Amino acid sequence: MSILVTGASGFVGSALIPALLGDGHDVRAFGRDPSRVTVPVPVVTGDVLTGEGLDAALDGVEVAYYLVHSMEASAEGDDFREREQRGAERFADAAARAGTRRVVYLGVMVDETRELTPHLASRLAVERTLLDAAPEAVALRASIAIGTRSRSFRFLVRLVERLPVLALPPWRVHRTQPIDERDLVAALRRAAVVDLASAPRQALDVAGPDVLAYGEMLERIRDLLLLGRPSIPLPVSVTGIAGRVAAVIAGEEPDLVLPLMSGLTGDLLARDDRWTQVLGVRPHRFDAAVEHALRAWERDEPLAAR
Image (tube, rainbow, N blue to C red; front, side, top):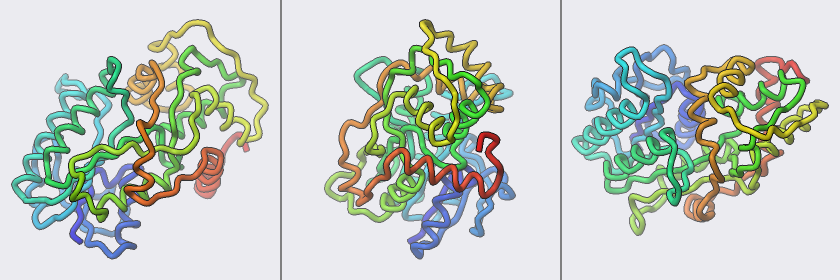
């Protein structure tokens, strides 16, 4: 099968491409800088924001993965919501011109029953655009991915490593369902080949089996790192200030951290577990996912807390 992967240099794309190659697919990548794609596949140079290169990249492609996200502000002054929608629309138009049978989009888990933050609203708008892009389109909605190169997971680990006390704001009580990187990649692999004829253009919530509050996640990571960090609940939330401070402590960009933290306004839980049957994946538990990610992390770089 001929497959295109956008966002090939990112955490998910770089893990997905070797898996697709192992399944025997003909894979090509798409990106602005071919040198950043570390897996040995043909790379079409282009940009979803301008549409450059998309027609060439999608030529003859049966399945296209859209793994592109924009969080940072741009030099032109537009925000990530404008850029995400523009990129999705240009990709959708190019996929329609190419006759691409299936588009697979990796988005985020959302609760459509309540008012969405700009970050979550943007992801949902992109999802809706891409579900109309191909006759067998499918979207996978995921919460925090537990993997060595996942920026969200690395952010949590760095906070636990570097803070002598875990000061937990009120959003500590909100719950979600983190997913093991291995399960996320398995879901994406299956999304390319599973029979969707009876239910095309659908969104599946891909989630781990454990429902955890954000504060509990930090404490579980702390315990798995064998650290004696006490946790203190904070009575009030100062998201803007706290987000910038946390970004500095974790060595992460505020443009990533602030939208994520502003989205912690309530539970983000899977609507159901249909994905396990539709895609045939048996997900790992949270502790097993963290242990696996930490072992892989330590093969490449030391963890200061271990």
